[in-house]
Length: 322
Image 1 (cartoon, one colour):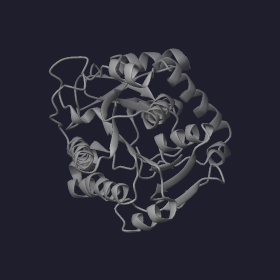
Image 2 (cartoon, rainbow, N blue to C red; image 1 turned 90 degrees about the horizontal axis):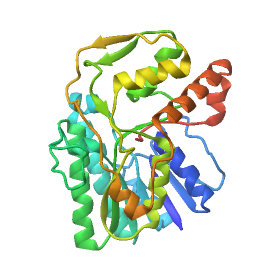
Image 3 (cartoon, rainbow, N blue to C red; image 1 turned 180 degrees about the vertical axis):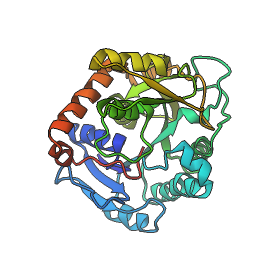
């Protein structure tokens, strides 16, 4: 099977591409490559440094004729979506529509879409099931929900099969920084640099942290599934930021000092997703505990500081991808 992965040079994208290659699939990557450093993980992978809103997408589909698409490319910053909603909508909504048009035109049989827990907004109950209402608090959450609706409409009109995966808070090793990385990445970096760890709010807000390798596995399993489905991809555990800091203190053996900042607009206070459906439908389950994931992040960061060339050799990039 030939799989086109948008945002395939990014954080989740690279792990997903790696899993696809391990499964023997043909892979095509479309990524903006804005940092000028879109590296090849494997010579068998076709790379296109193209924005998904570009009209060039038509020629890529015509050339490659993918059987399926994993759509990861997105503007992922809540803060940036509030500052520039037009840019957020252009990438996340118009980019998705452009992709759907090409999927229909060139007979793609299935699309896997990276959505977000941000579509739910403040929960009416916990853990949040897929049937929960959607009232996003940020423009980012709105753009993800609208994209879901376009996918569902295209499916009804043209018969395109889909899996919409609503990710919880994805974390893991990020070899390249964007300045908008997740809270755990920021914690690890500041801890290693001996800086106070900035906590926005009182630190009691909870998150459902799911490791990037587990998310990549869910992407591949969803590709092999059938039928139209919306699935939460999560650890199913509620962890406060202060609890996460406690784990980092234990792993590092360092005195972790939080520095509290005002809460940020658009942030959700409590979040944990019910992952029972994805377990039943895809036979997927998270393999990494938060402790294990943080330990792997700390080990990598320690080695990277000893050997700065380590990051260059891995060739990871986060440009235009979740």
